[in-house]
Length: 295
Image (cartoon, rainbow, N blue to C red; front, side):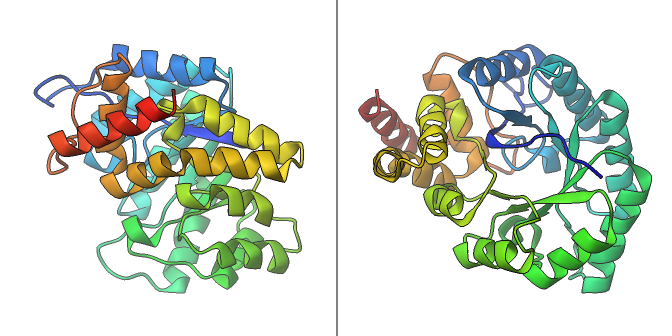
């Protein structure tokens, strides 16, 4: 299966809530999506960790998925995270996103019970059999509790026709080197760990999946352009300039830090949904200082 051209800076979206957290704020979601696209990101990815997809009801998930896809309106590719605890629910979400017009669905194998390799392979196989759009395999043991080896990832890629790309978020740059080498350079992979952005591009990553463009889009885009131009000195300077913010976003928790950052830039999107707390006063002050230094 041929994949859409997915490259560059792939912006995660937040899911905005009302002040009391009880309902969605789709108007704010639309404004956040427009800001990301207007900034120049190369793709949009809703309903992942930053989008609090795990904290939405099925009805809310459907509403955010459909609204996001239609708001993007093919201006850039849309990569919808369809991960869920059960294969049946993940299949339902994948089918829904495909029907609404998603370009790619992203699958993270999450489970209460530790999954065997055979179970993980079957999970991807069932989703692959259920949809026709490309699937981005997502490896992030910090959030899923499941760490897929490079060998398993390549087995899945070779066994499931529409698993055509990999998002690697372990924070281990050697995984990307192994993906490139063992995949003979034929398996597109994407960096999902902010502090590894420069190393990941050097290792051959096609893009960088990140929430950072919500608050520092130009630095992210400039880094990618420097990489494309093979200007290592410029890329290094840009990366280290933004690294304190990238580190802070990761360590502070994506929904909390990004929502606080958007509020600081004039877009109110509510707080994260409990049990996740909003960024505390000290964290807000630190983030404001970091963003001010980059202006």
